[in-house]
Image 1 (cartoon, rainbow, N blue to C red):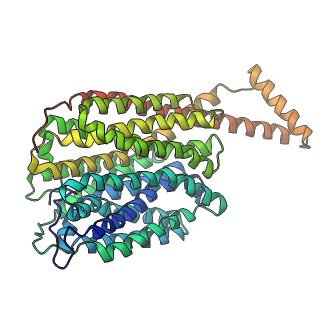
Image 2: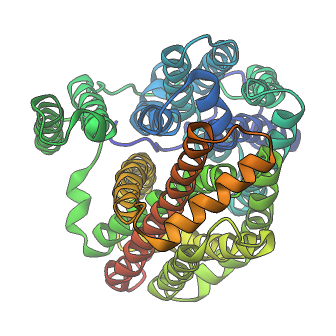
Image 3: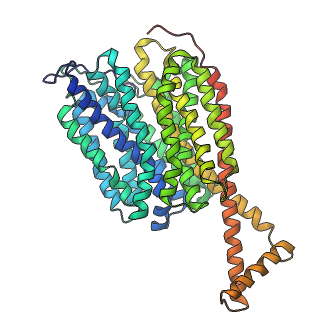
Length: 524
């Protein structure tokens, strides 16, 4: 085994032949339902995050594990999918992973502590990581070559629509009930996937060859991810120069370096790092990492901003995200056709530029930003992602020899998910650091000798007096408390603006490696 994407298995004994049209679409329905449930789980929880933070008294550094833990575990277990398929078969792998996903979702929905909830999110991500690569393997095993494009298009449309409408429906359910309902919202899709998968997915191929699994490499990767992400998440609270944080980050980097060295020596590596010698593919990996960081990082930030600064309900946040999701679903078929006709660097750079502009526009957001302005700016970024992804996937592997196309596609997917995990983590860290920075800077400018501050405090004390608050210390404390809230909200707003500036700069910088993706087509 070399990556999360393997060659499609041969038609197993006892299964209908590929010409059975009904089975093809039932297989598509099974993997679409499973993938939709995992995609929903990765996005819909972000809408409920402020409510979850309030329910458990979680800080920003703890809450980000709800997203980061899911993405990190999904990234790691993606690399196990092909080995499981060769070992026990596609059907058993898919159904078992979906059962684990359902079980962890149920436990998360009834969680009584933040540790239990985060642990179940990690398990959810692990199950999602196994199921995601199975969709392509399953569809390639039942569709002939000339129908695979159409099948993947229909499958992709369903998967893209899920995060478009999911946050909106999730927001409505949260407003009507509570945050726990988001973990049960995915159940109908998951249960349908289990029943359809049990009935129609192919079993283990008679000629399947199970290669040894790289347990050492997998262990090194998981340990490195846990140590580095934990160090980054706890750095602000524990102190970046503390022995604890330096130990976590140093150990994680050493294990990460060990993973890279081992992958170059192992007989059956998880990742074919030798593919990075191809300039076009290496450039595509850099862009894919930034793509994942921008996509998942912004999806994490927007709900926090909407509910924290604009005081929107979860339903309101979902409605803001809905237009961008629908636009993305519409742009995918068009961009897929364009990727067959136009040079990959042109489309990738166009997408990067649009997302960079979108993030730059988000620099101006505050509590007064109009609903449709915010929705439009987010939609511009999603158009960029939609234009970029097909060209990035196709153009990234275009220069690779046909024998390693599967490994290349799997590695691109892995790098994109890895970017999502680190992007969410780092943007959360940056948000916390910039909140503290701006709060201290703003507080330092406020004192009783400053005329505007004195006038503001006096005006607010007068308002409190009109409301029946006793004179003296109660009014003074009330005015000072409100001033502190105003300072914090302003610092919170400026911190979000800083995060979007960083995202914008990253996407503009990624245009340089994108330009290096130019290559002549290799006849596949």
